[in-house]
Image 1 (cartoon, rainbow, N blue to C red):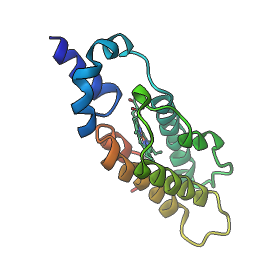
Image 2 (tube, rainbow, N blue to C red):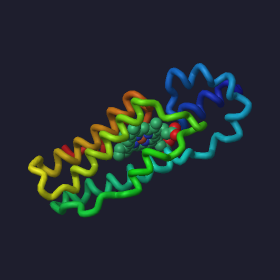
Image 3 (cartoon, protein in one colour):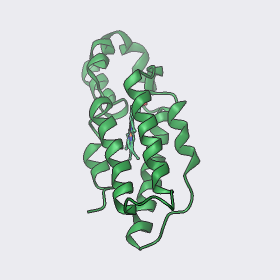
Image 4 (cartoon, protein in one colour):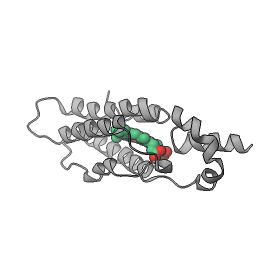
Length: 145
Ligand code: HEC
């Protein structure tokens, strides 16, 4: 039962990766009491989700979103679940993601706004393919068809 709980909490809160599975037995005792505490990164991701929903609505309404959401830069410093360290892939994806978000706000960019927006969302998805596959179906809903 305890093992089951740990598995569930890993699935819900920390996006099980292969490394994660290996350490799950060790962190057993310590991890369970923490299971309702969302990491800084998780909170940031949820707010990025909401902000992107708003950006999507603006674009669909024919408006040009005007302000780069600076809080997205926290992706470089926010703590991951269980203080999991940033690896190089994560850093690289974070940088590409932030650059792609900046492009949404470049008025002189010749690529259509919708494509620049979808590009950024596709970077969310790419990073999630390597780090955390669970939320991908939800993230795909942010794409503009
Ligand atoms: C650089 C890699 C990366 C990028 C880019 C990224 N994510 Fe994440 N995302 C993660 C990781 C890692 C976690 C797990 C955080 C943790 O366990 O602390 C996560 C967690 C999440 C979660 C789950 C939060 C929860 O409630 O458990 C959602 C939803 C999410 N991301 C959405 C997004 C969206 C939307 C974008 C783009 C706007 C995005 N992510 C971009 C790596 C990324």
